[in-house]
Amino acid sequence: MICLIDLDTVMPGTILYDVGDALRTLPVNLPEDAVDVEKLEISIPLTTAFLEGYLAIQGKELNEYELTWLPFAAPYMTFIMGIRFLTDYLSGDVYYKTKIDKHNLFRARNQFALVKKWLELQPALQAFVREHSQNIKSADQG
Image (cartoon, rainbow, N blue to C red; front, top):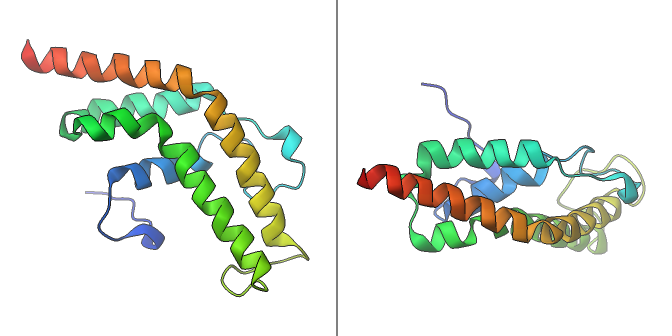
């Protein structure tokens, strides 16, 4: 068996943290420290493919709370990382390694720009998750 483990988030918690952290980076066209946030884009096809695959395999295990909040996992985790990068920048860059001056500030601005983009996608993501979770429930009952 092959398994992906993110050692930064290995702890008790909701699966929404893991899904949100994966979506925070997977469908985004630029690295998290990109300076030009105007060029940031989220790939809808990659996002929906990830969610569709995840729901097909794990959807039956999710409770109503998790299904309801699944579309918000990406902006939530992206916001948390933005706060963490900004806090580290304001604290003198003591946690995250930096390569250039204001590196964590660039990371924070990038994450906050992504939060805005994720929130703009919410209606479509909510409809997508709702439709796919209903398909899972229908298949279970059939």
